[in-house]
Every structure is written in C-alpha cells, then in structure tokens.
Amino acid sequence: MLLNKYLLPPILLACMAFSQPLLAQEAPKPEQALQNFGISEAMIPRLEQGDIVSYDVGETSQKELAIGVAMIIPVALPQIVDYIKRGNLSSTEGDIISTGLLPAHADANSFKKLGFSEKQLAEAKAFLNAEPGSEFNLSKAEFETLKSLNMDDADNKTLLKTANQTYRAFLLRRLQTYQKNGLSGIPTYSRDDNEADPAAELRTDAVNSKAWAAYFPELQQTWLNYPAPLPANTSEQFVWLNRTVEDRPTAILSHRIIATSPAGGLIVSRQFYVGHSYNSSHVVAGGLPYKAGTLVFYSTRTSTDQVAGIGSSLKHSIGREQMKKEMIKRLQRLNKDLKRKPAEVAEEN
Image 1 (cartoon, helix red, strand yellow):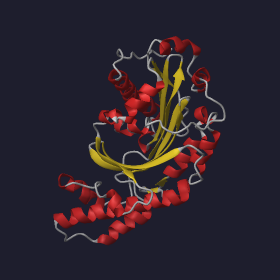
Image 2: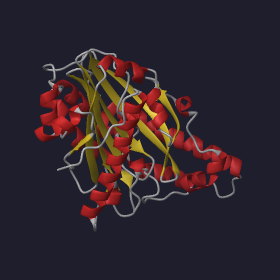
Image 3: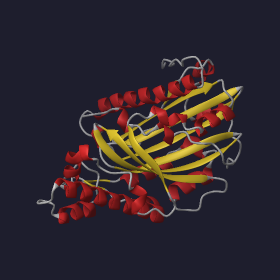
Image 4: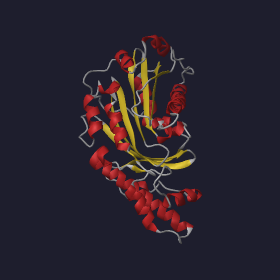
C-alpha cells in the first residue's frame, strides 16, 4: 500500500485569485467559522499566535481520507490575494509535470500539451494494454476501446501517438459529459470484479460540506446539482493537470468554483477524473478577515481504494497523518513567502 503526498490535490486547487464579490446568506463571522470547523476554543490562542491547527473532517466511507488545517496569518486579506494573483503558490507543486486551463468549448487541441513523453513509452504501452483493475481508472467502454485498437505490430512511434490521441479523446469525452450532465455524467471505473464510483463519492462530499454551506447555501446547491446555473458573482474554471503520482504520470480533470470579496473568499474544487492511484478528491479552502489578519482554512477529502478493507483503521490513521503533513507544509510555505516567522504546528489535545 502506498499512501503519500500524491493523494493530496495541489495547493493551487485550494487558493486562487480572489476577485469576485462574495455571495453569502450573511457575512461569515470568523469566530463562528472556527466553531463550524470543529476547532476548539482552547486552540484559538494557538491560532492567534500563528500556529497551524488541524481539525477533523468527517469521513463518509472506508475509502475516504479527510483532514483540515487552518492558521491565522497577521497579514490583511488583500495582501494575500495579491500574492496569489501573482501565481507564487504554483511553485510549491514540484510533482506537477504540466497543467493548463480548459476553454469553455474544449476540443482535442485543448489537451495537446498533455500526454505520454518518449521517456514514458512503457507507461503508454501499459495504457494501451490496460484491462479492468487498479492500474488505470477507466470505464468499461474505455477499456473496450483500447482492446479494439490491436497495436501488437505497431512501432514505438505509432504506439506513443496512438496512446496520446486515445487518452486525450477519453479526457475530452469525460470533460464534455461532466459539463453537460454534472456528477451523473461521470463514468464509473471498472475494476477486476466491481466498480469504483467517483460520482457517488463526490456527491456525498458535496452533501457533507456543511461548514461552508451555512454561509453559501446557493453555492452548495449549485455544486451538488451542477450544471445548474452559477449563483451571481461567482466564477468557475476547468483545469487539466499531469502530475507524478506514485512515480507515474497521471492525468487529472478538475473543476473549481470561486466566490470572494473583501469580506472573505471561498473556493470549492473537485477532481472528477484521476488517471490512477486514487478515485477523486474534494477541496474546500478560503480566507476570512480575522482581527488584523486573515484566517486561512484548507480541507481535503480524497477517496482511494487503498485504505479500504483489512486494516482500514490503521491505513486511515497513516494516510490522514501523511495528508496533514503535506497540507501543513503548504501553509508554512505560504507563511514563509509572505516573510512571516516560521509557523509552528499546535499539538493536538
């Protein structure tokens, strides 16, 4: 079993340029947010002195790993917004091979920078010969398409070209069906003797995102029922990523919705397709003015078959701790780049 930082979505999924007016039923109060996140009153002094505090995020199945972290940075929200706008956070993602925004009407050319390189020929061959199981996250129809290609006598150049063209076609189709049908448009992953259902996982995550939904009920309903129209004054992005996950290139499709204002900011993000190793992820992050600084919160839910089954409790404990360490590193990097003193981690009671 491999449980490592690659189960964690990139920090750029958690923080984006805050530029749109915030839509909320009422202006969120940071003190109430701390309570909603399950951060005890006893930990508030540690937060206020600059420590990073973790908080529980209720896991919804044996396959899910979930954790949240928060810190108060003695910097006004607009300064953090400006830092994010300059793209500095992306430098923390050493495992990203390439990434790009997807246009509203994507086509095959939208994925031209995403593919197997010549050095990844073995991975491309494995993809072309893939069968239902845990090596690749593909649907029954996608596996059947690969089987029909019959590349036994093809040279390496043809193999690589065919693998890239086929994978890009799969990704485009997945993007289009998600944009048209939302969660119900996400195909299941075909396993040896069953299926993994990322749509069901992401639907459950949306339903259980209660801490921020109290302030953004319309946004939560849009998130759950996408492609319902976006609430006024929110924006969305679709992104493709090619990441190194467990020493293998991994194609990822991500959807983000952003809502912000001088009163605070929020981003919700879901990876609705992941090439292998884990099934899906759901990120909620944002910043709220807190006294003279900013409360930054960041939570992740990741679904992976690796933590289910025998020894699940121990696997969850290990996986959760590894995720938390990576999330803490990212908040520490943010603190460092803002020229603040190093952020300590508050010990849990």
